[in-house]
Structures are given as C-alpha cells and as structure tokens.
Image 1 (cartoon, helix red, strand yellow):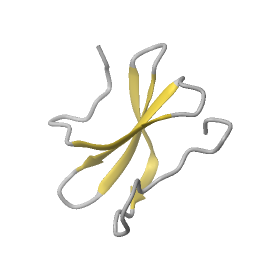
Image 2 (cartoon, rainbow, N blue to C red):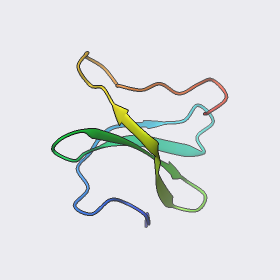
Image 3 (cartoon, rainbow, N blue to C red):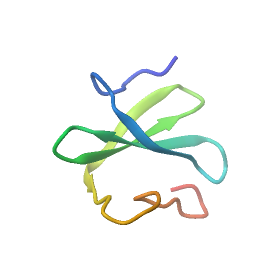
Image 4 (cartoon, one colour):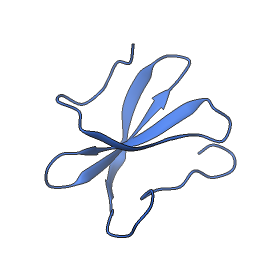
Amino acid sequence: PVTGLPPDAKIQNTSWSPDGSMIAFTHDTGSRLDLYTITVSSGRAAKVGSVVVNNTLPGTPYSWYPDGK
C-alpha cells in the first residue's frame, strides 16, 4: 500500500528512478500538474515542493537525473 497520495488522485506520467528506489508521477488537479515521488521502501508518497509541471510537449514532462534525483 502507498500512503500520502493526494485525495482523488488522478495519476499520470509514472516512471521509476534509475536505481529503482523511487517512483515519480504527476497528479492532475484540474488546473495544474503537481509532481510527486514515492519512496518504494516505505511506500510513502510526497509532493515535490511547489513544483507545477508543464505538460505542453509530448512525452514525460519531467526527467530523472542519473543519480536518481
């Protein structure tokens, strides 16, 4: 089970970190896309600061760094 998900989560754009320790996803609030991560070992989801994701171009609207950040 995953804790910390937003209410009525509308999850999109999921991807695993390069080292497999985290999952990132966007949550569509209806007026913006928020970025979240899930720490796999704890099952805890957390919003990434006050980041608003721009999804105007095709593809995933965020990228993992090679070190998993």
